[in-house]
Length: 483
Image 1 (spheres, helix red, strand yellow):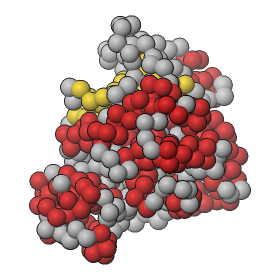
Image 2: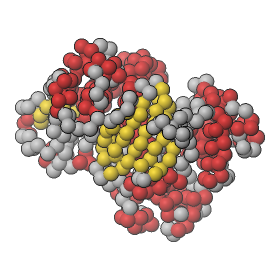
Image 3: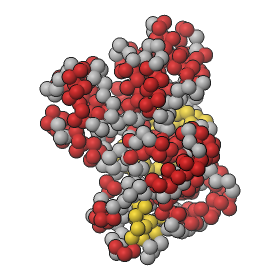
Image 4: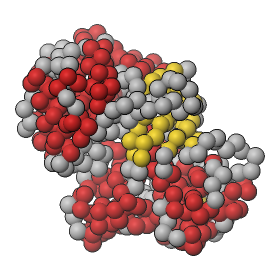
């Protein structure tokens, strides 16, 4: 990926937080790399190099700045937006696929040879898949060192390292300190209580209208799976090595996250899914600039800048929700899904040892397939559609996860009986993270368009919405809010 030196240097000189995660600043005179907004004195031009990834900076022999913590910066927005192989690879690496399945597993998921995948990633990011996964393991290790009281050997294997020696060498190389020294630097900070409980901060690019985000999630919250209470969103999640729960509280400058994990190896995937759920890697300034160019949306953008597009922690769950919501209200769909949930999976005990049932993950495709007809309080045709989708996901014929091919997933969805353009579009928008989906036949979209003085006829609205590209999904969120 080409980085224009002058533009990058101006961003560093102005300490512009919007560029955190877009690139990294390497300072050759000190041997460190920083995020663009680092508060340190701006380095001289002749001592600066710019890198497209933290892994590339580490590969050049630089260590992470302890002041600005570049590894804690928001992710680059382009990996959420891009639907090409590199974008898909970055989402899969963030979800821990390399740690679980190795580079061969990543290449197989993407349909490319290991050599060609390495070549593409190195051309874009200055580092191959192993180096990118190594940088993520180092960040996971730092979080565990600073937020838990676990022993170093436990942390090493929880973070995905093959040995304690590899863990020690990597941490010393990346952070310029031993694991024990990193733990000393966090002395005095509270450590989350409970086995497998981790508290951390999730960075984002401001602005972030927390009320709008929580309102969206609360309106669609499924009892037993998720809830919004006292400014915090909580939900159960299914992770590669076990179940867990997350509690996310948006605040000024970051989202406070408390993760309860069955297996600490799931920390990196849990963080990646929480970030995707709240759309924390988005570039709200770029999105709002495009939408505000339309006079019909300009006032809404000014009044509430930075509105996010919540995604999904489970693609199959989002497909089930979309199919169930066809032609019925959100309230009716919630009742139907609650009954399915109660039949398909037992309620877990309360996390704090009380009598109140805890939050659980949404049923898997296999569990939905095994549920009796009585679990589906819906027309027989819709029940069959749900089972058809569940079978396709369970057999690997339909990939609805972040690293899936968006166009292929939509093509396979609409080929299934009972699934039309609205359902496929909704799944693409929220499960697959496509930023440029319009739902012109959606009743809420049409009402919102009418409220803003826009055409509410689907065909006319579809043509009008070309001016919102490539952010039509975010326009849909604003139209829903206008309705």
